[in-house]
Length: 350
Image 1 (cartoon, rainbow, N blue to C red):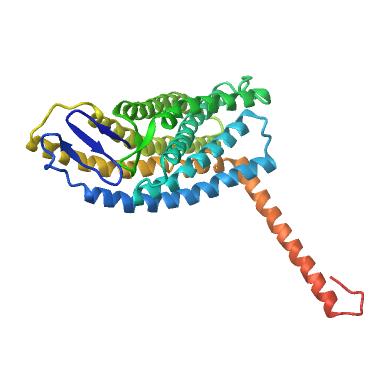
Image 2: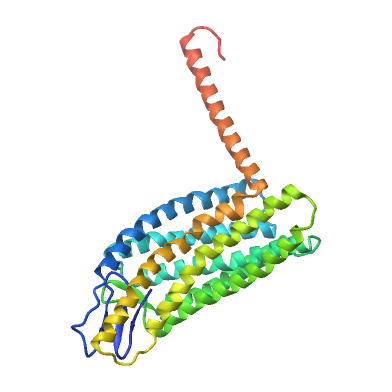
């Protein structure tokens, strides 16, 4: 979130949250319980997300490097998604630290971490849109040249995706700063609103692409051909849509509602200030919970977009079999050396 100072009151979301009017500075909104909730709840769940994301996305990169053709558009998208999720994950430990201790790492680190985190966030969203559109074309028109794009086209698509992501994330690098020595936030309410509505726009575009593409794919799959495969694919698509809605809708609704507190307000009396405070408290609890659910996409993406595929499952089995074979070979060589030493003087080994 961010800090915004208006003519009449200020909202601060970090380690200290309060509302106060310039005329009613003694009428403070006690949000210590919310702060403590965020300080305890957020780091614990982020730790789980970080572990699962590192495990899943690093495994994807290893499998792609060993078994897949990275020149194909599909492999390039999966690789970029894994890298994007890892970049996003890198920022989570810093935000966990932020919730516990406040921002004590300096303004350059504030800018860099915010920027890197935003690049991971936007690139992941753009890649999911692209992958959804690519699946739509593959089902609706499997003979299309777009389905089989390779080589320079995959590189060009990757460059465009990262360039757009960096552009969208640039306000985080240019306009974040450390305020009150412990808050890493946007410099003013304008850029706070810009960041919120930019995330909302990405969600709306993703939602439209999801609904349009997957609704048409489902219609095509309802044809009475290949029943077993059809049911598996429909189940996967339904799961993807449910995960997307559950993961991102609450978060985007909450941050949109929070954005109303960044607009200039008319001066209010103490009773109205208390009412505003009471409205803000449940919204802040909802923000903590919905954000953790939404940000867990970096560890959920590998599961639903990669590991459910038969090809990747087979590649994982191959990798495990190779690992098991190498381990057996090492044990076999170790046993041969041991037996030879026991039977010293004889040329005998197993």
